[in-house]
Image 1: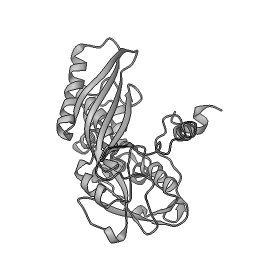
Image 2 (image 1 turned 60 degrees about the vertical axis):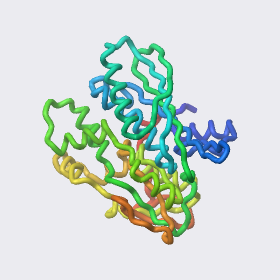
Image 3 (image 1 turned 135 degrees about the vertical axis):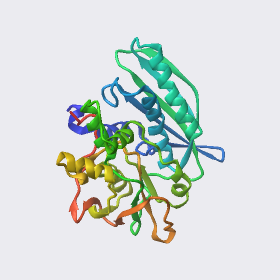
Image 4 (image 1 turned 90 degrees about the vertical axis):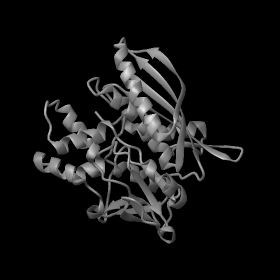
Length: 308
């Protein structure tokens, strides 16, 4: 059996079983130290897998920090400290300087600090970020309960459209296309939701692999059935214009497009508190599985090992 046959999450489950770990599987690992809950997370960005050399290095640096902040936020925490390991080919020094300008800009924005790291040589650029955050109340993927409503922040599918536009390598883009490209190259973690998630959410995950995949993580880890209404999934006007222009279905992008870094979370109705751009897209019941408009929804989002 090869990794491609079981995929990223099948492999994670095998490793979790070997380690006998009750923690592996959430966005972050909660570590309790005295009266504090620290959140540990790590993520890697590999050239030609997560970004291309022609992407602006400042944007690559910004994104490397943002994707980790997003995991901390999804656990109800604030980012604090960052360690960065770089694997680099023999680049122009100016590229690395610009990369770190993007990292510094992101850290200033999210109020966290790079405190160390490591350098090594490689044939391709790899940026590995390890982040420590802190939470007043840890929010996991496993806390959803029957009777909860399912909410999402922002709009979904924009990043996938932005990626497709970038891969076209055109010289000129329309204004709405530039907005989609920016949502892919320079996503912003929803730090404006930290207190809300910490105070009200039963379960939360950031949408990094796509709605159809990430909602399954909540369902499986919480042992609940989740119903989604397609008409309630928020889709931006920019994505609608893109899909109209290219003859595509925006719902497909909202369901399977990864790297939006919006938040998907459940609320008990008695703690319902409308906030910012959150939108109810479904509900949680006893049972198992994920259903879209009454039909079982397959997990069609991003998988590192199953994607060709």
